Length: 129
Image (tube, rainbow, N blue to C red; front, side, top):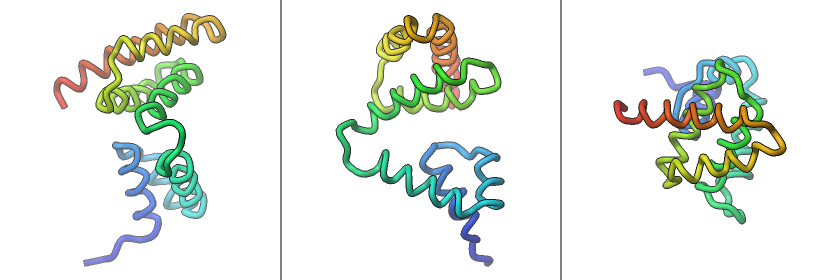
């Protein structure tokens, strides 16, 4: 049996941390393993070590940032993956929606509409997963 390469191990670690395999991560790990190694180390510093905010709060930050930054259809799977994780960590749909509502004044209503749309789709998808 062949041992996995460093690139394959890095891609697997990225997938484990994100709860999903993204083909782009595998490709980047293959072509730029040094870069992915730094990303994994940064994730360790930001999300794994004890900090002021726990994993649940970090996931809500991800949802808000992705809804603000990526309010367009090609990025819906990425946002939905983080919404699913937030729900699994205990956030209620109303709490996620309220966090998105806070973004309306500085960022526009599209953030709320986009975020809630992705959340509803994620909830439906979780019923069959």
